[in-house]
Length: 367
Image (cartoon, rainbow, N blue to C red; front, side, top):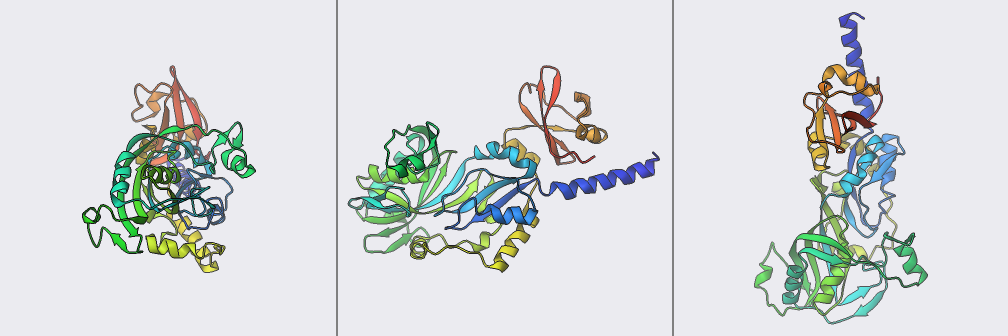
């Protein structure tokens, strides 16, 4: 084939790759309170015209905030992103506990309100690595059954604790027993009366994967010789992914104690997106879907190998791989997953077993 024709063919292939890869990506989606995490996928599936999507960590229906969703071939990254740290803002109600530890449950305990001093002590106590018992109403499986299904059946089962880590916590806003709001923008909470009785508190938590903020709220209440449950939850970060970059961020409700309490009054109303809003969200999905970058691949724990231009076709055709096909192949990489890039474009994942470089998966066979 003449060089000019080959060059033109390569350009066509490159544009085909760009066009087709846009459904194999990562979508940041801002879930509203009242929606389930799975119903949120409707917008993404319809925007991209695909069925294959994967959550990297769901949010309860009462919660709002960041969902990181992998689409197409990148659903293989779900387990990697699920392992990322997360940042939440939580509105905790003190003096009561519900069976679900959230506003959807029934009150099973009522106690006195804790003091501000007790809350500060509790936040300090629940830092670092801690043992945590997940909520009875959760998606964890015991003996092949979901805990939430067991709880609804009325059966009691011993829930094993597990180690999680709270990297930091910060008290942002409180409402006292007289319904007066204090927040850091208007005063220094630490200068308030230690014995002030707290009815609601807004707290920012940075936690490891697998941490239940509902359980954390419950345990903080118990530590304060009181009780507690969540009335609101907002996820703001997953690893380096930020909520403000998400599709639909502008449609989220304000997240303050007063606004969350106000929204609870209309919680029974089903959230139904306006047709124009839904169309706008689908448009945003198409614009904001992102491919796997080298930085993100490193965050996911992959090693990196850059494939030389001359061997891109061979890679997509599953040809035998050699180290000299790469700009620089990682050393000491036995049995590790290696993300393969060419000119910053993610092509797939390989691993080295002995002297052989094996394909784990190729993003899409386009040539």
